[in-house]
Length: 225
Ligand code: DC
Image (tube, rainbow, N blue to C red; front, side, top):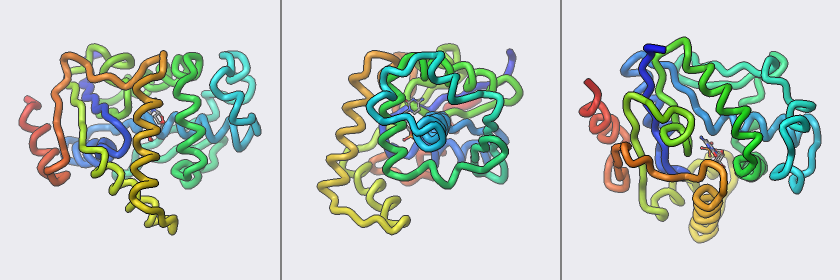
């Protein structure tokens, strides 16, 4: 369609969702948090259908759809925050746990999962001008996006951000553990066979290590006409 699409990809805790939300608010865009969709599907598979972790990577299209029905899922972006309903229940609260971090990163390696979520992402973008963030939104989901950004930050900085977000939930962990976890998820994102985390050649790279979130948004806005 003729709607505007802005993609923001990058590794774990590079600040994508914060930046995307700020941009959405400033510019009146609909924000699609694609990671939250992976998390929602991971939740439905593991918590509702009780599928064991070791099966997530190899689940087939039919097996996925036996458990998960797209028409039961609703993604909302309202009041500058996003949520996911499943069977009209708001499941958003459950999606940021360490267990779902893990399950989501496992299903993200499954090509059949990615195919199902790709369709959902494209259909969500049909009605509005959108900003979408994730790992492959500029490379695979919207290769013809109007603007593509790739956000990075030093691993130590991303580990500190993750440590802080976990601490807010009462989960205190040492920095070296946080760094290990960030590296582990980076590795898995980059080395998977299907839609690995890559920087699209036509993306604008922004390193947020030494920038505030406001500064990053200003840099992005400088590119938008
Ligand atoms: O950004 P996040 O941590 O909420 O993403 C959750 C998981 O989903 C993470 O393991 C990476 C994966 N993901 C993906 O593979 N592709 C996307 N477009 C978004 C997320």
